[in-house]
Image (tube, rainbow over all chains, first blue to last red; front, top):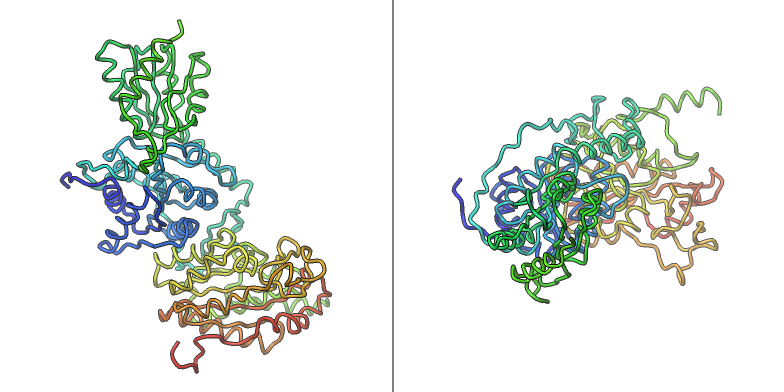
Length: 359
Length: 256
């Protein structure tokens, strides 16, 4: 499939459909709205379903139902809408129903929400944060694969820039290898045969085939997330080998930081960039490796300081100082409510921090 | 109970029922409602098309006891979840099972929107006017005067407001093809309720629209009554607030 110039939301919708997504439910909210509109436009041509859910709570529960019925399903929102979805995201993690949540966030203020979540129980959510539309297309397809592989809801952390930027991209289906059959999905066909199916957070099973019950069921799920924590760390490290200063950032902010680091490298500064691509699992060891020779670690995020907790957990044992460089900016949401984010602003802050670098 | 009586009960499993053992209280109406549901599914030959989406309450236990596909979901959300299931498997007989706490209290938005969309499913509400599973607190469907652990002197409209008649609300929506309210407190009502359930499943299968059956059930434990008083209390109080019968889409009615 040749590359086409597409708006990010359109590209993500097309990539989702290429990945086999046939059910989508959403409720409008900027900057997620464009993805909902794209799905409503594109789904009928593939006999897919796009639901105008009446609340975000209904949207995520519809996706849960579709996922339980065996479809590749997705929903999405941002901020407050994702907050309303937390109950069902946790439930789906615990009753093992896969679907994808496209979190087209208003800026980066929802890092805790995305990586910690607000649902109940021992669950985690695999969360990928693309830096641009090309990566968003790749992540979209990978996320459907990971959801099915781990039988769990997974999340993309996108934003206004992912949603609205035009890039030339190829959305064609990518093969991430074989998956186990969905022999657990509900289709009603086994009723009365003694082999009817059940999806239940408590995993009590049937009278003729008792399940493990909640304790053992949740222990197994915890083990599954431990495995994901080891196997699914993704990151990008740039010029960190000899760096005295490592700048850590995520998502689209990472694209700005890459540019800053490239410019400062050219000017002779020993500076590197590290970008966690998976926000959960956070690439702890890779970040520690990238910072082993550094004299300071700077964290640039467009919020009051959230990912910095994970950075400190990762590099803490090295004893390298970790300093926040970011700030809250509503403008990053695309709402034109504050100063625009620029490479120059970040470059000035990094340069100033390098001048203050501890001996 | 004599050995003979126990034997009789044990031999009377409903179709698709895997076990006669359940955790429900003596005098509870839910097992009667389960039986009607399973008989309706079986008699219509829907065993291998039925997918149940069940909320949280005493009735949830049915997912262990019945040999059909079940998805147990969050409190209040069953109609939204069932929508996802039905849209993926349009040929399946998708039904929801919720209590009045689940539907009238926690999930009123979901049931109304699902009805308005005309989803071709059958939603069943077991209404006993009380949170039985948590031990007897007031729900949005508790009737005026009903004593619960959180309305000790009886539900007082002045301070607790009025009960929500979900069936009447659902019947007012254009997406709804069929609405009926039955009960399980005497043989006549039991027979009618089964007819309501069968008609609801049939109309949903025909694609007529959303179908809804409310079943008034006894909860002597949650009503703080002697077991044997449950059926009479249901008739004397609940049936006054929630009149029985077909509210919309009866076989004799013109149009829907």
